[in-house]
Length: 327
Ligand code: PBG
Image 1 (cartoon, rainbow, N blue to C red):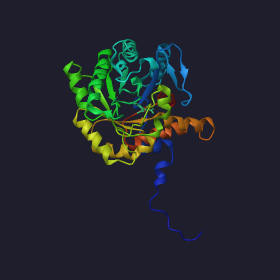
Image 2 (tube, rainbow, N blue to C red):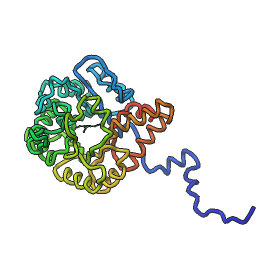
Image 3 (cartoon, helix red, strand yellow):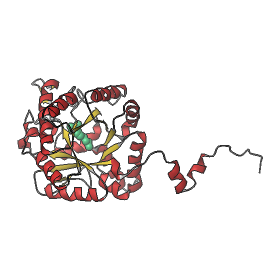
Image 4 (cartoon, rainbow, N blue to C red):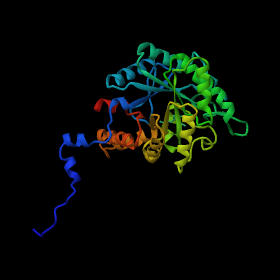
């Protein structure tokens, strides 16, 4: 043997057994970190979503079944997304605050059955809008900010009255967190939390979600309100504004392509930071798994662990039930 000096530093010593690796582990992933997004519709049957293998638009029975399974694996929170018939979609999205609408009815059903389940609702007009936009559209195609605030407040109030624990504005209108907080407080819903989609990017990865809800913009795109994927300082600005307006929790979306944003935001605020592993991220992983190109369980868990490591306190993911079962 030539006289090679022995390495002084051997990081591998901290990896020599699973027990040692556990001591050295810097972040962890458990079922308690996962939130399950669920697509629901008025029909009674469950309809598969072609671009999201394993996901369905669920009827009420399917919803109960899926929440039962998720809870049995330790998932404690869900978020509902309604797929509405076109006949119910209007320019002002008025079905969004119908007290007898799909979301308030299902929120009530879930909370009656499981008072401890954390029920989160999405606040934005797109599933209810005949334009497929998150806000009110002017005749010239502009998305009107201040006119939209009023309808978002009605929608948030409707969800709070139905029993939602958390309302999550995903519309990216300026000032909506303060507006919703004041309307909720005015009606004594001081305990209803606001999870703000603070840094929501104009992303191509929402494609399968828009197919699931048939909610793609009928004209134009969302770049005048959703963020430019080139930006990170702007994400910090959005988050700080939302915290200042009273957001209890903030969210970054999508997740995997935006880990740097999650890490930056984590360093800037003390409120819980969520990340949304969106439909396109789910679809990419599932497509590769179905082709046998990557190994499903380790790939899914790694994707979620990396989002936690970047700094997310909790993760909205269509893998929530499956991942929780493995954990
Ligand atoms: C809309 C909304 C979107 C998602 C959640 N809320 C899509 C959009 O902005 O068009 C996307 C979630 C996903 O892709 O999984 N308010």
